[in-house]
Length: 151
Image (cartoon, rainbow, N blue to C red; front, top):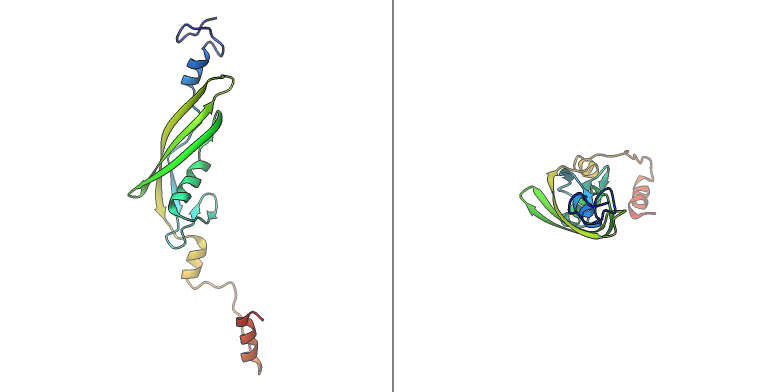
């Protein structure tokens, strides 16, 4: 059997190894939106997660939204922020089974950044309290000193 694309010997689905690999993708993704807290820097990805910097948050968010279709051996992600959009460059290297040849794929994911305060910062900035402790009696000052001093 011959490859329907180039005429070489077909090995996978009427295609040669090279044409099969060329027609398939290593990964897929959709451009998305990311919520970032302007107060503490955490980002939302099914829950609020802490982050060291905006760049690391963008890379973590992007990597969690990539679906790997092949056997990927390495990926490199780098981000560049333009306005309120992050452009994440993705370079993946690997192969698509059952083909044996490897492939390098480059793509750019766009992530729109929305600044929204996280739940913890909203509570802290709104003077939210889980409870109020009332200390009464003749030993109130001594009790308050122990509470504030950590016992």
